[in-house]
Image (cartoon, rainbow, N blue to C red; front, side, top):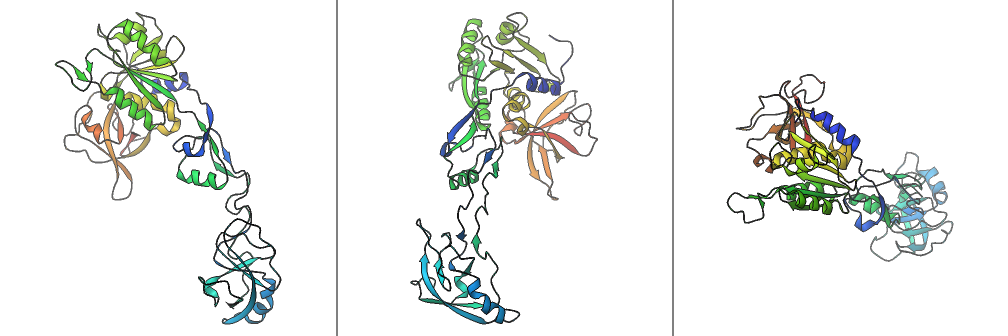
Length: 421
């Protein structure tokens, strides 16, 4: 047992320095990659579109065939017309497209490839044709000026050029990226393999659904499993009683195929704190245990299992385990996505308590926008786990210095550091 409490921010930095989890990159089928994290920068394999395409339903023309009309009637005078024969019709479907015969127009649909020689598309609304009828023999355009080169034409690579950056390593794959890469013909994406994390909950008192007298329904495994899944990890939960042999066997099972093991409970100063007595100074001394200047969640630990798998030891109380997860485990999984941010502190809810004793306090909060549109967090009332049913933030309050400090040197400005949950 240490004489002084360890600074929680120093412990957080220690976890980030000493526990480096593997980042294996896999080629995943596009349809299976939703929600995964890219393991490498992604670049376009081709121009998109690959061919010039019509951006409007209308008629593809050579501007040269309209130049005399535009020169004579288009400069400052509206209401001129010109008629061209229609030489072909080009629907939006696969197939070769030939040249546009000089002096003619081609009826063309949105998304159809442009015929060679055409340099503009005149929208059907400015013609005398029925857009839903058969292709006409001729088309009359009402022009007040010569159309600009490339009018209503999607140029090669206009949307995405070959080699252009589509997304960066660390970006999460969403529906928009899926649509883009499929349009570019990609069938796989380089994504990070989900981290595999085992949660070992300890305690003879833990029970299932039907808790007998003196028993406690186990919730840490499910709670942390849900948090891990939300952060993209593959989670599984195991239970061990307060027996060294059983715990040793459970930890061996947990370490199999796991990148990280979490334990909850058994790290206090009692005779039945099996995790600490087996792995701490009086046991194998393979884990370090400290008491942090943190409420709740002061008892914490970390180390390595015999096969080298890193292990982080969290308190057994559900709130302590949840706070410990967001402060010390989540940064290892999502990196800067777990960084605290500073927001304005709003009103306290009825019954919400502010800390009176020293150290860093973690309090349940709920985010919203105030009347000025600024992000604000309100403290939620309730004891222990109850307010976390509604909380979407953990407010980090330095009791000795007030809420504005919260582990930084920034002055008092009515703001407080929070971690989104």
